[in-house]
Length: 267
Image (tube, rainbow, N blue to C red; front, side):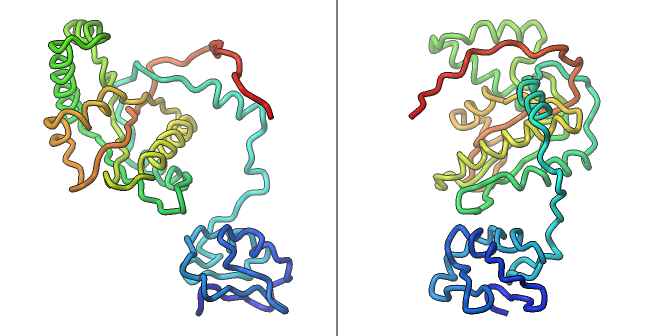
């Protein structure tokens, strides 16, 4: 088959596949949809043409309609539920010691792989830490980095190190798991794609009863402190673009705290 194939018995000639194509490759021909051959190489395999067809009449050479999950008619959550989800999300800093079953994390990442990436490149890669001993090692190395900053007179470090000396974990919050997003250092879009994916993961985790918190100090140290970068053991040429600790919250919140009012310019 070519780039696309049309089942003439199913096609209603509605033209939605052409409207949905973001690159303009699919067009409505004299009778049925077809492609502009000279620009077929621009196809980003987004699957919009397959997804938009109401009768599953269009197949892409890299994606058949039967391979795609059906979209439920009521898939959009009500505004009230969405508001509660987004406003109710908290950065969790206290976790139960319970391990999260690997199958749950796998399902979570399977959902998150649908987060948008520029030109549908899907370049975000993950490193998932399940072993508490590895988390302790990463925390300890990050604390070492903080001590070097303190010696250099960096502000805002002393309080964190005092917490560490009291037996607290201000780095990974004693969470049972850590998920790192990484990608090629020379990919200018990998940073944005990773942040979008991590933010999607943060929200998706809520439906599993899980809490998350951004591992900001680990992230800073990973790209500035060689010992920590080596400990992460990322693929050659890759850097960490962000990370979240993950686990079951020690307690649930009862209400939504206030925030600043919206600051927007309307034109």
